[in-house]
Length: 374
Image (cartoon, rainbow, N blue to C red):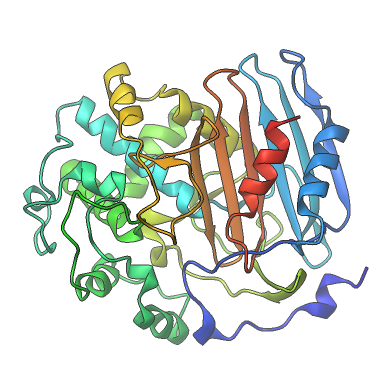
């Protein structure tokens, strides 16, 4: 196989967008970690590696990590390919979580609702000024992707802003202004996946708690669950994977570092596949929120048919999606694709992290569907 280094080029900055679609490819060298004892229903390391490689065949994804856990504490891990030229993926390699970040932020909002510090039917104007239709858009509308606000990361102006200096930390207000310049749809009607919604939820957290969303997530989720690898953003190094653009089933350009502020509360978190699996269990089971809040969250699931550009879900609710009866979230953008899903029937969790994006933004779903059938 031709080395990755010989295929790399410098990504044209003007082509950067926050939601680059993803395509995939045959993994380079593969290895698997031994499973920890559990219920006995987990795939073996060899089975998991084989399933993942088959699902990724011909895709071009340079590397990734997949973890499957059960509710008895068992787990199986497969890591494969390269984090960067000449650097193999390891179990401790950190990837970008992209839109899975939304599920962390939404959970903090539900915790604040449990504490009576906000109400989910409050209008966003009660916390933030200047939001179009802010007196009619509720916090529930934001989490359910039914606010009617345009997606800031889909606006053409964003590419020019990124091209000037992708390493600069933008103000959240700069990104929100891109969305506010587009005439909004009536709130509470159609589903439309928009990163603007979660940026606003992050701002609500700041207004209610006095802390930014990253601090709230750290205090309320990362520390209690001991997710030691999870933090806001990273620069590629020996511990962190680089993101790659794919084309025609081959590895193309290594993408430049982008400051986490361009994603913000909509996609700024990073971490390992193991910590992502731990989070997926807490998210899907509702262990960090009250039973009433979890019940309400599950009642929010609705059709995604209104938005043909939506990530692939059977249904979407309050910062959480549903696939084949499993609950969790996916993420895609600028060289990284990911998924974490929890099965309420079996208690199993599947966590998937990949470091390539191209034409297919839903490749982790393909891997998930193959893994869950093992």
